[in-house]
Amino acid sequence: MVLTILNVYFWYSNWKYLFMIQRLLYILLFLVGLSVNAQQEFHVFPKDHKETPGTTNGTGAIDDPWDLQTALKQKPKSVNAGDIIWLHEGIYNGKFVSTLRCLEPNKYITVSAYKNDKVVLNGNVSSNKKHVLEVRGQQVIYKNFDITCLGDFSRNGEDPDFVRINGLEHSIGEDCQFINLKIYNNPGLGVGSWKHTGGTIFNGCLIYNNGYMYRGKGVGEGVYTQNNSEKTRVFENCIIFNNYYKGIEVWSANKRAKVEYVKNYQLRSNVFFNNGSPAGRTKDNLIVASGDRNGINIAKNIKVLNNILYHNTNVANAQVAGDGASLTLGFHKNAPIENVTVKNNIIIGRNNGLRILHAKSLTFENNKVYCGYVHMQPSVLEHISKWKLKKNTYYTKNNTGFRILKHDDYDLKTWHSNFGLDGNSKSKSITQFDMKTVTSVVRYKHRDNTFKVVILDKEGQSVLADFSKTGLAAGMVYTIYDVENLSSVLSTGTLSEDLKVMLPMQQTAFEKPLHNTKANKTLSNFGVFIVEFETQEIAEVSTKKKDNAFKRFFKWLGF
Image (cartoon, rainbow, N blue to C red; front, side, top):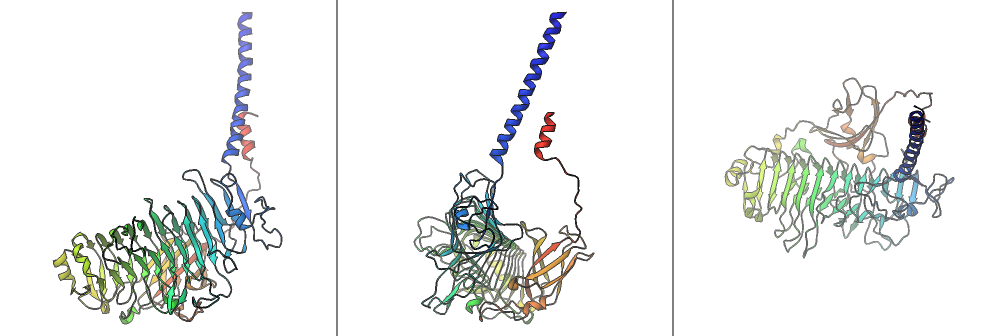
């Protein structure tokens, strides 16, 4: 009996000892996990900040911040997966190069404006660099700041003091994201996103007023982009307008290419309008093509979905004369586009609003088109049997709206009987333009309760935008901005019970000061707005303090 009691005692003592060791091991593993997985936050201030200027010798702490260039050159051992670099309010004068790299798969470093701070990167400085921000890294998210040139500078490429400055240059490095950036007023290219940058995503960006004049012509696209990766490049919910040359070029001008690098894109829910206007002549809002004569670098595997493309056109008066290409597919007969899908888009332009110049395989479905003619080059006859066109609505100059240049014009019936295309589509004269008011309401993915709203109304009347399917509640206050005049509030109000907001279309026709005398404001039949909502209710804050994570963890262990 005594031996049994002693055995139990020793067993209990050993068990208690082992349990204490086990608890200590849990604590050790917990602390190690915190140190390994803890998200680090670093802080950046302008060099001329009055209280806490950023410096090259800073630690990145809130009271000892980095300057911007120091932050952007940190090595992976210092800044890596899950870390955030906060940019605090101010103007960051300079031209910057980011070499940040995240080394863990499917994770990111984030460079973002701090909370609601207004952060502007100003490249109008003396420097040998050619870009306001050049990105040479991987798996980094850049969000919520401006890339621009402030102050006075020449827009004439023939001036002796002219300096070409591009906004964002993404030169190398895969899987980066550019979110809610404003890239504007740069005397050069707005965005260059080049072939060695596969997997890139642009979401919610505004890209406008970029470019300059040279020998009487506009130079500088909103976006020039290429991709040699099998990863898909995405442009989503962006607004690209009033750039000196074209809006976005999915394109290569290389005439003697040896590899393909204009492939694997999705462009969805974007708005492209009035590109070329600042130079006095309209240009393609979007072109998908290649200039390769070798027939190797072909624009392929590209989807253009749910976009709105517009050039100033008085649709109420059936205006269509003049140049105004909104969408161009293909450029050279040796490099016809291949496996391109254009679906659910609104395409409004002038005489050549839609150009399908050279296409090997094309799906064109459920689009609404307003133009003089659908223009095509004779080379399409070689491949037209591979096209799939259906459920489209065409408003053209006359009944023979399908024009194969130097060949023939076709009405819809003959077009279908000859080529088997558009059997269930509609074709009408522009004088019969009867498109009902179009209201596109798209929520920004990375901005709380903020929406891009596009209105197309033939008569240019004020329009009620319906927010009933957005999850918003009556009583929220809203602020409306016209994207062509973002420095001013267009109107404010409170969301009514029917969850509708009036958009004042007539005000889009007002002559507001644009950045040059040639740029044209949109007509009152078209408007693009940013609508921000916020609640008026103040959430109650509990005065009862909660235990922090450490206290809760130790309670769980029994301490």
